[in-house]
Length: 380
Image 1: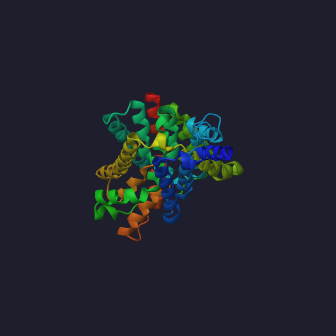
Image 2 (image 1 turned 90 degrees about the horizontal axis):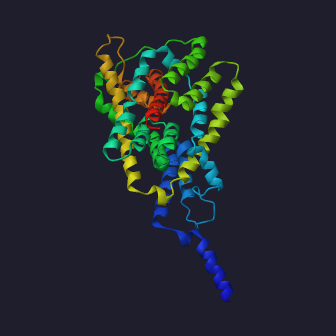
């Protein structure tokens, strides 16, 4: 009988109930909230469902030494996590993004590229704020990239500069990407007047196939020569776009923007979520990172809108730009461009800004990768 009780006691020690802490329960609850928001509100479900479930997976209490946790070398979860830790997944996602992105709006209106550049002020603004509150320069750089509203870029940079903060940075970046409509709309309305919101822009011109093919080659050469350290992201982005536009690699483009990006997005979401183990994630630093991430997103949105207003001071009537597309300078494609369209139509139901907003939006994708390369260049 004693042997049976000893066996049951030993079994109990290996259960999650025996090893559970309140911190584990808090993180599991947060994971459930993420899944609920994704399903009920449909906020970035392709990101929040894997991340939310990953949080639950990563916070199942376990007896130490079972070699199944994400931070235990050689475990299955640890092997999958190496794609995040070593920065393998983000370039593959950029390959898929390039294969599904149409740069026509940017090619037809090259002046709008500066809006995408202006929105990157959120990255460098948050970098300075993070330095001011005591983060090390490499940590501040990794935190700042949250302002680009680009999860893969945030993961890539944090894997190089601050791997210990990667979980908080990645979850913060993806969370704010899901909250794009909630965060950006009030900022846009606050910084623009009724008259400015009514500005109508001419439709983008038709772009030739030759221009579409030349753009990824020329764009890659220019950006890679400026920031060679951004090569993994920029190279895959423009390569994916060349696969799409060349017209002779349709199967490769379809694979990159379909099965490949779906598999990698699933793995990156699940493993990033699982990396938020309570003992490593619940800290004052994580809360501070979330706060700085929100500030960086606000600065990025405001910078884009205010820069358009500044440009309009030098533009003639008929050539002015609607400041509502300034928010689209962040890298959240196409969500931030949709916000421009929705807010614009609230003021004028017949004013369609989506195609114009796509120009700074895709410029923001390039801009965030360039910004990451700059930070990696002098902090790496």
